[in-house]
Length: 135
Image (cartoon, rainbow, N blue to C red):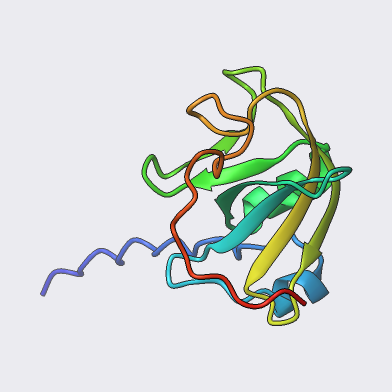
């Protein structure tokens, strides 16, 4: 009877480490794709500029680089606001909401925030609504 060669060892993937501080990683509630909504707001005027999506790596890059990084759901890649347009978002602060399922990124926006060229992604896109009483 001939001896069978020993099976090749199966490589064990290296453990992945989360780039975020442990308390942040534990508190974040991500969607099924591992993403969390990031509302971007102008730090001095409180204008809501846009909504983007971040995974742990995009949030880590945003928290450590001074520039906002998003994860593109359509292109499935990271993108840093302003790299092609020059319309940079300089990070002023990042906060997590009480449920951990949304982020508020306060920035100093250089130029237009929206890819259409408007200051915010909400400019000129108001919906007709019935308003409540004045407070």
